[in-house]
Length: 380
Image 1 (cartoon, rainbow, N blue to C red):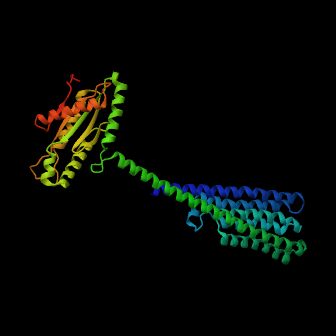
Image 2 (image 1 turned 135 degrees about the horizontal axis):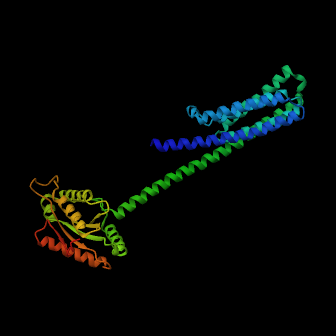
Image 3 (image 1 turned 60 degrees about the vertical axis):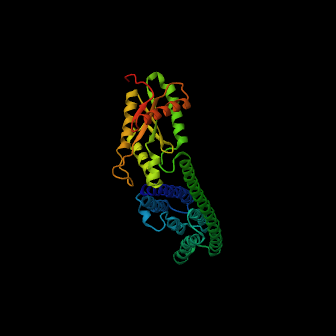
């Protein structure tokens, strides 16, 4: 659980950093406005330097907080409101020193652009609070001008600008929060869709499990076993010149009906499950076992030599004979008979399984608890 959560945090941090960099890019516009004021003689070059130092410190601090993950300790890791408000202060500084009141309007426009970033994460109430803080920064500049530089302020013009700025901020707050709500709705729908897809995938996996697995032993069922046999024989037909062999086996639990009749079907089910586990634990990774039906199991052994396939089959049968199963008397041994055939290139599955069944019948005739191969080993 920790690893997916860490990946999610990493993705969110990258997104926050991208948004912060985008905000930094918008301050290039503010820098150009300050530079234009310097060129027009409305500000000095020192004011431009002061603005650059201020905006660099503010933006650099936010970038550093995200890069060091310190922002994750805050209630709002995106620090959206703080970024919008604090980046307004360097602009407020130069607005105080602009010699013409109309030259402050472009900075108000840039302030409105900054507020737009609140739409990424803030609801209407918080957007209004941010807008109020931004407007307060502008109001503070006006108060400072009235107190210390009344010659640089025209109250009628500034009053109209302040009213227009307030209206624009309220509209931005409404539109931005509306867009944020739409994005949240889309995110919620995407989350529900992902959850629905996950449930669908789980349901499909369960259906596949039901369609391909035996409900009792959890082994592949008859259909899956025959499909595996078909693939193994088809591959053997292609690789026949290389000398590999496919050994097909049918294993039948000896006297299984007697177990059911004497000890009950519950104990019989325990026997089936125990045999299934023993076979799964014994066969090699490239071999296969599935429940063929009733107390019969289909086994497929693939080897480079027939003797190796025979040895693997014998190990599987002997593993069954060593089982100690709860519910059976101590002296009652579970054994199995195993019929084997070596698949012949071009042979149909029906023909092969018929030969394998005859080998199983011979194993039972020979006293059970043995393995019979319905082919003659050629010393392989």
